[in-house]
Image (cartoon, rainbow, N blue to C red; front, side):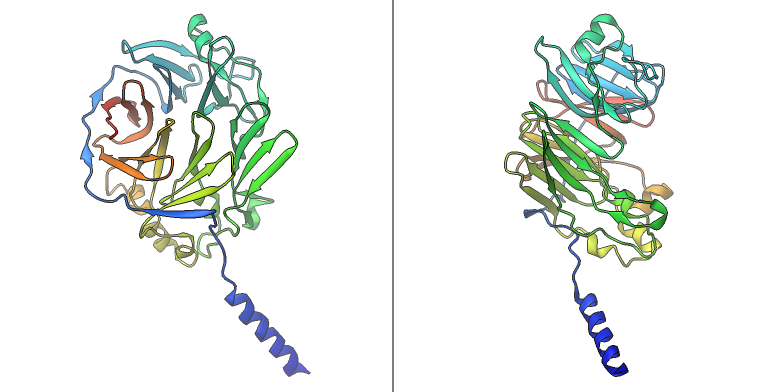
Length: 358
């Protein structure tokens, strides 16, 4: 009888060891090649003096600069005459104040023609009325939209429709048991979830790895038909078609994948994993990616300076062209009317580049 039990246990072990984990499962995958010789872009230094910038967005001809300055969270730069026209928005919990504001760079035009930029404020989204804020030289916010932005990136479509990316979740982070991210499409009471990460990666040497490994930069196409999620540590972009709900994975040829990381030691992990996407700017035609490309250990040890590249794709995921930059940009925004890319670095310098997309 004991031999029988040992045999059953052995068969179970064989079965478990043969089960292949499915870390990544979009509806379809497109492999691309973006490595090669890149042209360079000449930078123009701009007369912008802003304390602690960390994010920029483009609204018409206005460059909206989010900062970490609690007395002036938002600065607005008019690119038509290169002038700083507003420093607004102080820290607080009042109707026209923010706590740690952040924008996913979605804006809309309301019925009166005012430009509204969706800005998150911890557990809600509070649209910032750019037009009225400039007129009154103070922050003017619309009614807040309750949603827990600590756990989701949220985008707003006509009616009560929302698209959200839910980040890696857990019951208790000390248990090192994590649940993979998912995309959620909510239409009033109807909720549809897209589980393109069926199994979450587990690392023996670094159990908390999933908490950051699935980070990405999420942007919505201005016509509200597609969303792109460019991963921060993989050469992968997910493009979600909102009408059909299909997800296409855009993967760099020969890049490491999820299964390549699960059994690596801590040292090997940091030698293998790269810093990928730093920021993304989108138009109805293009996805413009600011890309790092350095290995984590190289970047953290500062043995190689940041010299990012711009990678330009269409919304089908085809790579169109790339540019190498000499300036260590951390964030970008694109003026599609005048075809300029704007960027800033950690030294609070702002730059402008003429960007012609073929």
